[in-house]
Amino acid sequence: AQSVTQLDSQVPVFEEAPVELRCNYSSSVSVYLFWYVQYPNQGLQLLLKYLSGSTLVESINGFEAEFNKSQTSFHLRKPSVHISDTAEYFCAVSVNAGGTSYGKLTFGQGTILTVHP
Amino acid sequence: NAGVTQTPKFQVLKTGQSMTLQCAQDMNHEYMSWYRQDPGMGLRLIHYSVGAGITDQGEVPNGYNVSRSTTEDFPLRLLSAAPSQTSVYFCASSYHRGPKYFGPGTRLTVL
Image (tube, rainbow over all chains, first blue to last red; front, side, top):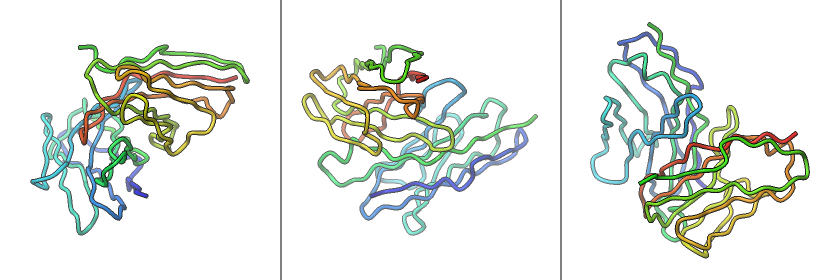
């Protein structure tokens, strides 16, 4: 079975500073990887995804993540954060094993990013 | 295109009561799933479906039932509510290998 570990439960940072939210996964088969963002009292929104191809993926609002197969990581980065980036971020994995496996998504515990002025 | 909708938004139950959380999507997605979110535990998969008539258990299925008679709907039934089922419930849908789109959630309290 696959698992996801987000290494930091909370990350405080000042506005315009860079940030990295760390995510490691464990799986015996190839995976698809996702980052979701959740603003207070809202559902989850897809931030970016890795399905195949280029290992560096980007979102429309300046976040990027790099799939590192040897280190089994999918860390999320942003070079300069804004107050509006304050939210909880979830890393998630689904396995590429055929059958019904695509229906299952395993989440990490979440990282609360707080951006201070 | 409404995406994924969930009703109700809030619900309070007494221990032992039953209820159904509704989930619908209008994107013709084949995959639908239910998650519960508890503080510090991320989201945990309860049940999922890969098409009409096909369902399977996730990580925490006990106390919950699902069925999928149509592509659009995937209701979650609580058979006999317990305080441990107090949580926020999210429904999600996706196409094959694609990212999941989440509903706005149902906040359930069991007294």
